Image (cartoon, rainbow, N blue to C red; front, side):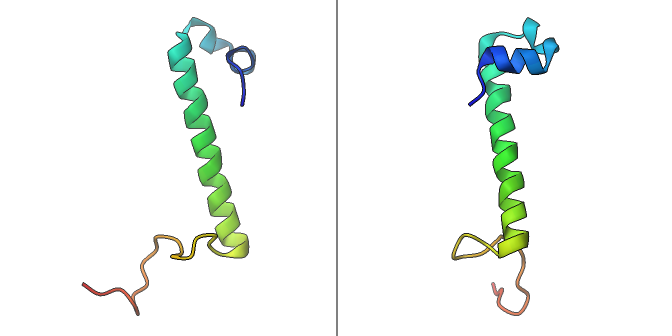
Length: 63
């Protein structure tokens, strides 16, 4: 995981932010990366979860 110092080096505007806010930015960055990876994986190899992605299956979806 990136340290606060590494985050500040990547984006100097973070120098003025409190450490707690930098931590939240770091977590959001990792969450975004995980989401991007999951989308990539599902497009290339199919869902890595047995229930599949949350996409409508009109032939199977019922109320």
